[in-house]
Image (cartoon, rainbow, N blue to C red; front, top):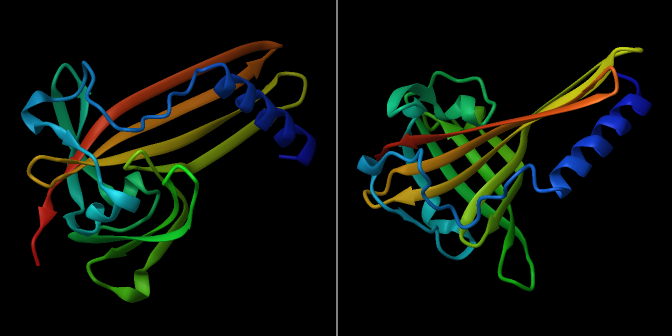
Length: 195
């Protein structure tokens, strides 16, 4: 995609976000789609440090009406790995005046440091870890339209120390000068593994 189209898509998405079409989930709280059997959600504490630990890579996500299906934590983070476990750790790059932090999330599948990944687009906001722009895609067809999609994820903990995630996928498109916007949000849970 050429630079001009990309700028148009970014401006369009920024305008839609600023109009409240995309919700920032901090602190992360339950809603009507959250499975009550997963227990209460708790915050991650200062700089989201209580998130650190090992989790099963395979968790579950909600699809509809309480139905769940398997989901890999590595796929949530846009990483390719069929690891059994995933170690997560946070590194604070900078604190702001509100006590929120700019975070680098380190992901190590199966303890293999050679396969270590660092996600710099994360923030500890109101004791909830928000990783934004996990995956972005843009498209354009001259004289037809353009658009883009983005995936964000918000992390917290359940009462049993499982990792709880709110997955947010949204897209903004302009087709034949008609703006279209869509958003899908689901929940996911990944069990903690004690080492």
